[in-house]
Length: 180
Image (cartoon, rainbow, N blue to C red; front, side, top):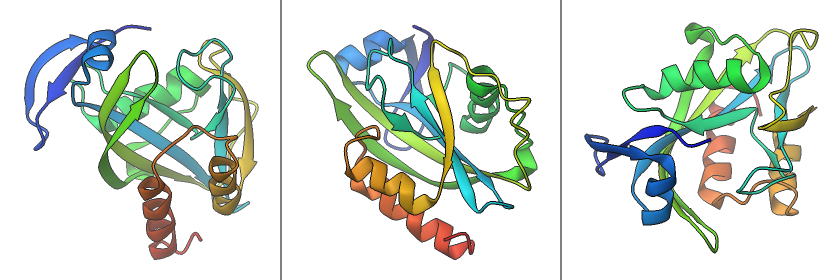
């Protein structure tokens, strides 16, 4: 889905707005969020398989949900919105922790996606799977895995291709929080 997003500079200052498709075509720096829902009772994270019709990385496992920061939105507002849209999960801001943010580049034959990615961890006691409803245009299935299993999926090519620095930072931050 094409949407209006903010183009930013290296200091996260908004410069102007364009449609997401133009930002990807021209390699313009913009913001995105990736989030993992961590269930304390199982000590696992929820991951989602991208829908087969997705333009980038169909049928690969990714984070619990992800998305582009819409024009005028904050990354936290985007995390809350995307959780509801993609998996019908209500995120409370006090349970949503920004782990880190990094600039990353992801390219394919058509696009150059240059993003400042904000990575969030949502900690909950238990996930009520009866309330989860997948947005079929975004997500085809979900499952619970350990952080090590998530990292292994990416290393085996079953997860969305992401730079190793994201996985390393995830391990560092999860260890600091006593989750890993």
